[in-house]
Length: 451
Image 1 (cartoon, rainbow, N blue to C red):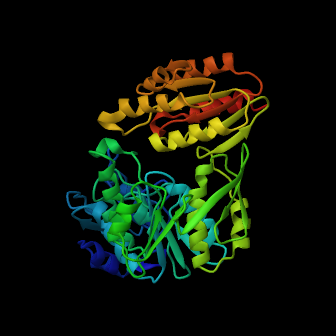
Image 2: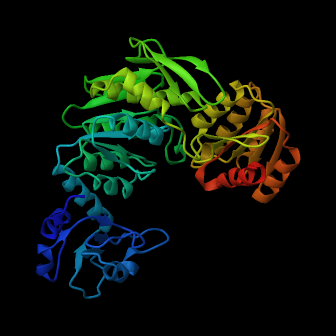
């Protein structure tokens, strides 16, 4: 973050101070966490479900914070306090105005699946020629996105921001802060449908990103998704489509598929690209990145080298080739579309026995039973040997799968069962929503079979 005078920040967040002398000072960063705060950063005291930032104001100031932004209800006297009506809104207002200070090109990314992977592919691709910053990890909400904007500095050319949501108007709020010139909607599916009436409402919520575009107003949309016509109707004339179906502006075709990589080509380009991911759905982030790479003057050969150097992260498709077994780690999250894609790709692979360990899919609301049951029906058509389910709702997957099946509500019992049934040459796909902590199954297997 570039240094900003507190006088300017006070104006941005419509705050109040009782000692105007502090307004001449500069802050060199914004923090909401006293565990990582640095000297001369501004501490913003947010209130969450499990914590209240005002409890840590004294710690923040003691650790070197230049000042603290606190709600008006917080009364302790201190010369280094800025009072505001709502600290979360203040964080957004500060980020929105800080963003205005720079002519950086901002790419906003939303979608039901693939946001983080797309962001990582774009970062790697565009960093070939440009100074790129943006979302770290999955900091894509009303707290994470503003904090990501503060990574912009005078040298930044491109900022890539991931935007998550589970409510109407969330993407609109984030887009108004980020003011992107380009917007990517990776796909629309039933993730978070527990907060919506139907998938159409999710598509409408995702389309809020289009409303917030500025300048070039480039819309990058998934041609293969059934909501492409709807999203295109919401977009200005500047639309770039990607997909594997005939008619996409950036059309990819998979040429070879192995257990832990695949190759593909793009219509109109002679380059053969290799992706070191097991799941061919990763072609979509690659196609998006190819489009932006060409837009910013990066050659097909350069993009080829970049793609081949990208490897999956833990929880997001990393493959562990252990002593006797193979573990496919998809433990970061799960929803109906991503789970189907993972199961379908697993079914196509040339492994020995295929064991799918599946945790509950969260945030599906009243339709949870239906979506879990549909996954079971989907599995019936696949080449799968054993299904193991964990949690509450996932029981429906096993019941409707028609395959050898075992259900658990205790993680230790699940892991013990695995140790009894696993044979040399087995491959295990592990997937579930974050709240299910399926990474504990992965960690057990790494410890037990990692030798």
